[in-house]
Length: 618
Picture (tube, rainbow, N blue to C red):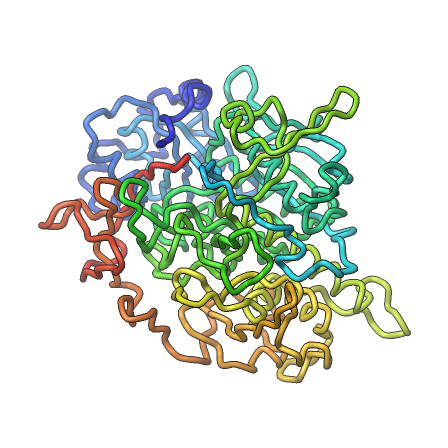
């Protein structure tokens, strides 16, 4: 079924933040002036562009405003001086969140102090409740980690989601911060560490796939990395929805406190439609800032791989921030409840690439994400609304722990985050980071680019699925952890940096031997097999944006149906029947495009595209 409209609680919050008139603020232009300046439309994302053409100009609209460098505080004070509830978003003084009418926002957009006006879009969780009763097998066995000696100890993982419910299933809930809390005036308050809770249940489920210690259910639902230092940043409400600006605040909080809290990985099992190019999307840019700071960011691809009415498979359903170039974007595998990788399939709901506007090749990999069991709070919305999906629950004192079966790229992302934590731990302990073992200087940590390349290099091919569907292949925990531990990050650029243990490019999983894909998708090019054996700035320099430095491989041809050479003019419109994934209202053919087993490419400039609101499968 489809989700209901935005929750009452969020609507009340939006109304509480509704802006007063901005007339008379000398810093900003008038709405009439904005209408006379064609340039102002170029500053609007897809949702803001449709808002500008709308009939109702009085309703409060949430927006994220990017000002010119150094102008943020002046714009902020001018807006507040006229009664608008505006606030700085995260650590960037030139990034503001406002609630204002259409005319006020167009007035803002027309000002030379304003660089960009984006929708403060509603982000939603990427987990779904499905009717299939086949439960996925034990994660450790599926990933080849049954005999692994790594458990994620001393690796800091932040789950930015709906929170986490404390229970004995989590050994190390190190910190909980609520980014949804607001003051009496409706303005978000500064997050402080507080008692953990999860009124929706999604964040707890994702966190359990990462860090469930297996106290209950005879360890059947043990997480991949049960001893990580787990942080829960709450950005989603009781219905699994929240605002983009709060997610950005949470990411920037993690960046600012990276060293204090020892944060290594961020898990983002959520998203919103792609409304603008990645280089101007404020959520994507927050992810890129985190990666530049040395934090590995794992994101979900989205659950828009098929038409919910006809079940036709479609492409270009990747959501933001899954379109962030440097993020590890994860689609979902259906393992059919077996440890064999031979029967794996990419789940039909898993979003395919390419990404809107930029035509990036996504997802990066796929991971188990179908019918996974993890815990949720017994007071959470997911638990109360899905009694048929409850698997088992245990009572310890006054605490009750329930286990729920869910599917989604959210779940696949949590599984991947667990493997990333093991990779970081294995490399640290092998090369003595901070210890200087045997009199040698400690090796630098794995960069986010290195982690991403390792996951792709060691992935296992999923036969029958193209690269826009499976990325580099299915997650291989055994291979990824082994390769991570074999890399000497002290190596000089251009030199061999792998130990002999990495030379065996196969993994034994469930009694079967599987070859690694040995392919890395860099931007829209394939890196030649073997190149990863050498230390290179692409891997070692965390300031290199994934895909920017293309000096290898060849252009990717995706099967027989999708080919492009110019990513600036690659698509027209894509629609599933009446459910629009992307559209260009200005075309002569209207808002209709063909879905099915092929992507129909148009000749429209990507900058003219606008993503529509997506109905979420529940």
